[in-house]
Length: 16
Image (cartoon, rainbow, N blue to C red; front, side, top):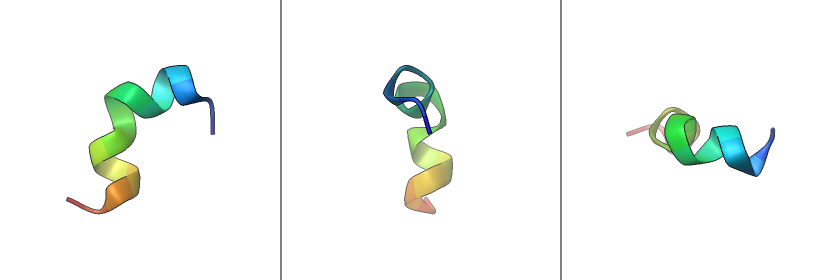
């Protein structure tokens, strides 16, 4: 997972 995209989809990966 790219950190650049993680910033926006961070909530998705964190399971918020």
